[in-house]
Image (cartoon, rainbow, N blue to C red; front, side):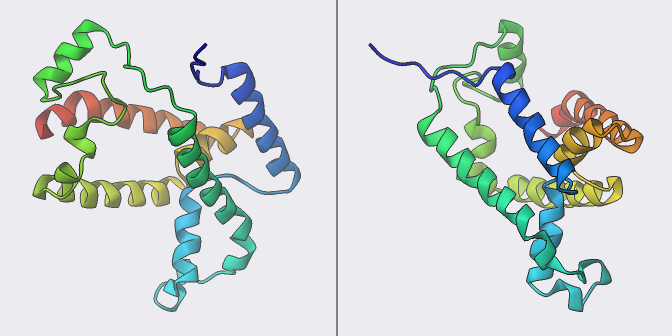
Length: 185
């Protein structure tokens, strides 16, 4: 009998995320991934050039463990816990994606039209990475955190700025996918 892997149901993964949040709150820490970039820059000596990076990065070592855990967990989930079945997309979605140049919509979570090495190392791909990276970096700094920090930590501790940021993230995503993305591709 073949065992088919399924995603963890919400009633398992949700309480696990909540448990992590309770532990972080209890320990007086906040969760977010973008703050790790600041820590990595501080480790690399960026504090000599910009005051923003001049802080005690050693106090943030625990958060770097979160990054390495996410990388290792992502690798394990992809390599050993993924179910390689097709994605059941609506026919209209498949037709819309085909019109945008995605030939095998639903065959992969990472379409090769965006995530192959050929796509990444094209002029268009490099420009998208550079401009997108700048916008994400600027946005996380301007918003005072990233999507995971605001959506998980900020909302769970009932912070109004995080609610505003999360609404902004979703609106930005909708604008991008419905208005800007069709122009780019």
